[in-house]
Figure 1: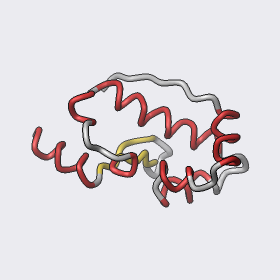
Figure 2: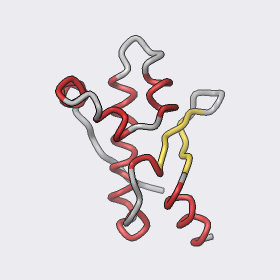
Figure 3: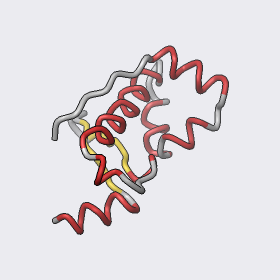
Figure 4: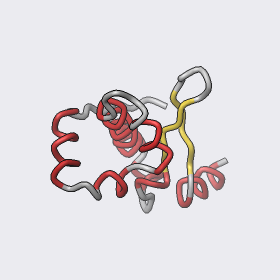
Length: 97
């Protein structure tokens, strides 16, 4: 999979300060918990937002009807990022084989 997106960390920080519920609309509880264990959670939150946006740009057909919470950036025991799919994203992935 190839995709890229850039997110301004300070812009995300300000957006969450203005609209705190944005955090729970965009990120899963697991992502929020992971990021807020860090001294500054916003670089990690921005990375997750950018990953989702890159996925959306990569496959417009696949992403149709998929909510933000249907895709989740996870971290394995070695700190490597990966994807967890839920809801419509998981169903579409299984259907695609």
